Length: 125
Image 1 (cartoon, helix red, strand yellow):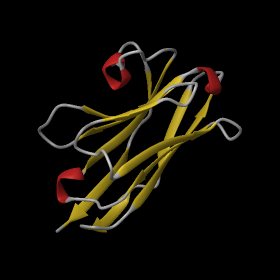
Image 2 (cartoon, one colour):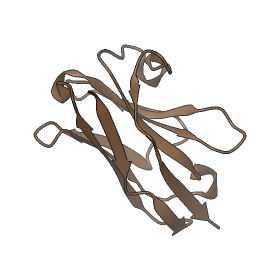
Image 3 (tube, rainbow, N blue to C red):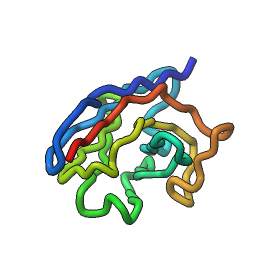
Image 4 (cartoon, rainbow, N blue to C red):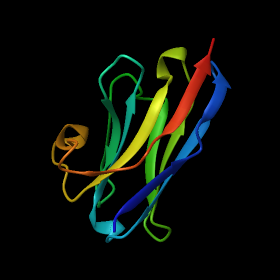
């Protein structure tokens, strides 16, 4: 049974940092592409970053240079280091797993990936 459990969210002031984690179990983590997504109230879910099984990464333009996605295959854990946070980064953040992601986060859909329950990030100005 696949499980993805996010942690590390919280409240922070603009300019601050947070590190999200996603603990994965129930599948061969190292062979899957992983992604971070977010959804703000009243908005559609958007892709934030993805990392392939080989370590290749992609980022949304809105977070390039501020966020870093990484993975630790020995610990079956995905990370998202978020620096220089802005109020517009406020959202529920989700991690997801998919066998392949040739199109980065665009490869992930609700029915074609495993999803976690999310962790809330709130950035105040």
